[in-house]
Image 1 (cartoon, rainbow, N blue to C red):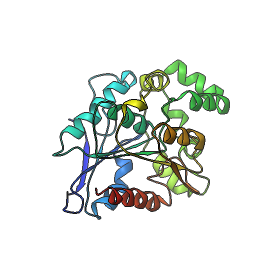
Image 2: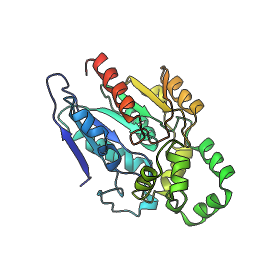
Image 3: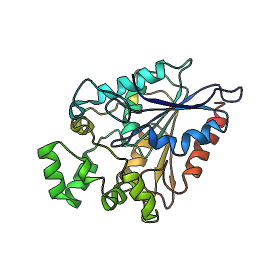
Length: 260
């Protein structure tokens, strides 16, 4: 059974639950630090799923062999267990999974936070090779990526801004876990098809993101016919960075505008 952290309850003002989908090397815990409590306190039911092989969710395959299709199936399982279709919110790799999910499923609304774009991981991978060619070579040979994102220095480079306190970076770096090598390959070839998505989307980005560039966030927004909004002095992990409240407030206000 998938690990799902479930906070709050549906209310008269917010009858539609929110389902949060984490990115690579993370699990449901990253939403439970701040976001689930924030939204539960505002009358939403807020849930976060750990994809199989992540957090407390088991897997019957080797982690390294898990695919985007497996992860989209997990998102579908978590969403279908709810009484109504949820608003679905994805971060980073989770944003790609949300895009893929919405190709075949309707939702009242969706949010993409620092999402990998519909064009996939290629540009991100090229940047990684240029910054750390030896790391990328070892990752390719072993299929293990955790050592190259989980030191405080490397975690800051990818996930946090230069303004984030060292203690915060070290705390969250220690919680990162190994990721699927197959999912990394899928991010190059199993790309979303925006023309198949009809759900209204809010696209958010971080001004100091070390993983996804502002151009890539804008490309995501253009693909779905909307405008991206960026948050200053913030790194990739928008739900954990100082200023996370501003991100949560923007999502809340957008959902209220949509009657959700």
